[in-house]
Length: 303
Image 1 (spheres, rainbow, N blue to C red):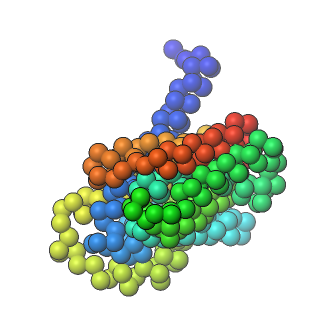
Image 2 (tube, one colour):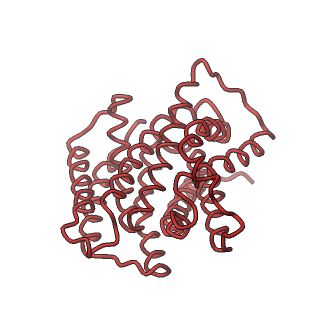
Image 3 (spheres, rainbow, N blue to C red):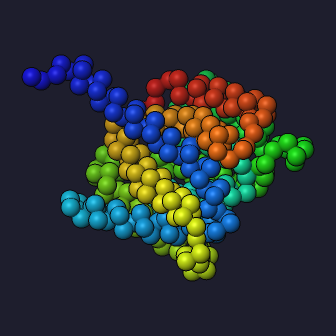
């Protein structure tokens, strides 16, 4: 017996939003997982080399069962830009930044991504910006400034240099979400992410190869192997595919909006397992950021 149309729509929405929630959960936990691996055992740039290489191999294995040709003449440049913004710049700066700052700082700064998606959409595809969206951008930036400003270094385990790198990483990832959306209308999600990661190898290997070859794998304790496996398989292969799959179902702003959940998961993980403290400044900053991103995403967008 076939389901009514409204039931099929609801089930489809539940699947999409459940996938996006899982993405935020995986990312939120990852902020603290990375503090185990980087930089004590593996340099941040070296780890990106491992992450991109292994993920590319896994993607190609999956992609080989249902290959799809790319129109390189029309989409080659866009795919290259997606590899640069969505993998190379995004991951290199994120891993370096999170090695310098705290998990709580990094997760809250990343909630600016929906605001940054709006800005990139305006610059790249001429998306109209309303008054509510402008106010949202301003409030979101105020929240970021509160995070970055540290009059007393003893009040937080974060580092302003790491905070800035995480912020730039967020801008790069926001650009990727806007650039990759049109590709999802032409190709299957696995095809896109496979080529994005393959092209990204060209960018990340020259930067991180020196750190990668100096890793003493024989001396790595089990918790490092488990942490690296989580970051590579779950936060790379699974998350990038889920994001690509959801971009087929909903627009970029909805995917970005679920980043709001990351601070919740990241903070719970950091407090329960890593002894980090959620300070008043984090609460104030989060209030500004959440209000800002809500104003940005409260109206429908076409991209």
